Image (cartoon, rainbow, N blue to C red; front, top):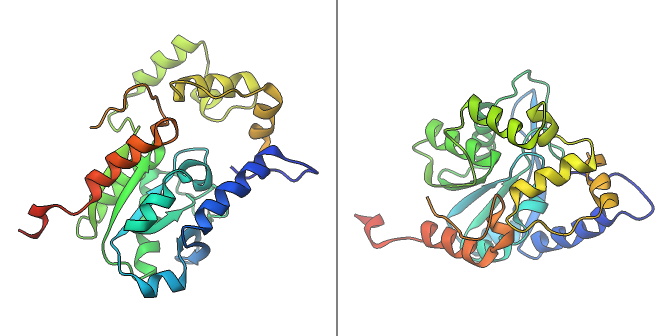
Length: 249
C-alpha cells in the first residue's frame, strides 16, 4: 500500500518505522528490469552485507493489497541474521510494474524467478503469505532446481469457487472484490475482522485513509499470524528453514 501525499499522514508516519526496520537489517531498495515489459522493485542485501557474509537466500513474498514493509517488518530483523533476504514488491504494488496483459499468480512467480536469475542467485527458499503463498507455490513448481524449501502461510491453495460464494453469503457481500479491494471503511473493517484473530483498534478515519492509499497452526491467530504472534511465527519459520542433519545426506 502506498500512502497518499498529505501534510500529515499517520500511515506514512508508521511506514517510516517499518522502512527503518528494513534498512537496519542491511536491506536496500533496488529496481530491476527483468525484460522489455516488466520492472520489479525489491529489498535486497546492501553491497557491503553481501560481500562480508555468505548466507542462504530467502525470498519473502507479501500478500494481496500489502507492500512488503507492512507485512514483514516483524520478521526482517531475525531472518536477516540467518539469510540473505530478497523481498520483492509484487507487480502492481509499490513500483513493480508491467505492460504485459498477464495478471495471474503464475506470471508473478515467473517474474520473481527472473529477478533472482538476474541477480545471480542460483538457489533460494521462499516464504509466501496469503496471495504470496500462491506465488511461492508456483515458484517451487516452476523452478524445482532453484527453490530449496517452501513456507506457505495463510494460503488456501485448494480454494474452490464455491468457497468464495459461501463466504460472500455469510458476510452479506455481493462481490469478492468488495472484500479484497474495499472502497468503504465498513468493507475494510470486515476484511480486518476476517484476517485477524484480534483485529487492532482502527477508527473509521484511519480506515478511510488506508483505502485511499495507492501445515503449522498458530493458535489464537487468524490470517496474519506473523503480526499477531511474531515470535512463534518466526520460530516456526526458522525451525523449518534452518539446516538439518539429513540435508547433507
